[in-house]
Length: 308
Image (cartoon, rainbow, N blue to C red; front, side, top):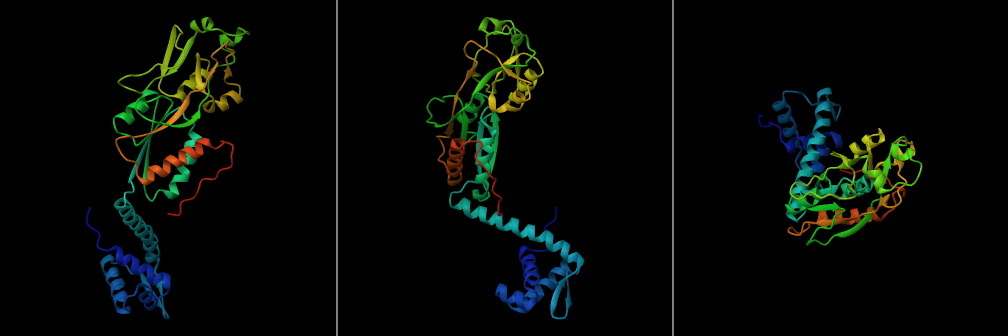
């Protein structure tokens, strides 16, 4: 890719001429001489080989080509300014990126609210979001590939900030044989049925969580796949209520009438990488995650529009 012939300063000068209505006005606004502004624009047109301005009376007016190029140049200049701002913020300790790993069972709506509120405060800091299941979250944090982690597991040697609990309920399709028993179900009834479980994404020490007493067990890679399987009549599973609200409402899934253990409520925690001090962006995101985790999901919320 060849180097551009036109500089950002030249684009800024052209914008000033158009925005202020002429060369003299642009010179005054940019604290330069009128001859310097005129030369800059003339040289720019020569380098591009395209006329950008024409003079009508005492006013400089864009040509058709000038309108197209100026419109594109505004975004270019804006991005360059944002890049310079980001470099300044990084010099002050502001992170270029926050790496967040989240257990797939954590309510996505709470996370969306926190990240939406973070965006206008981010100063260009990116968020790298990664979803894992069970011990997969712990592994990513321990290996140093995450700055923040949300999980329902107790990670030894770390102090986590308490978040919400998530309700998992035992469900099956309404026509499943377990529902046709038309009575309370015990664990002996479950043993002869197919159980759908979600694979732990951890590689070194994957954990088995919940009841796994069925003789036949299918393991799938995600909660959404498990929900699809079970809503289609394939087995039963314990699934987060917030993920299957629609299926429950539409009658594709129905809670199993278990004598005990039909629901469980694991608590989730927010952990930080203890080998790396949190920067200002990470600290802001932590507070937002905690605040929106504590807020009711039905509370009114409008995602802020970034001014960038």
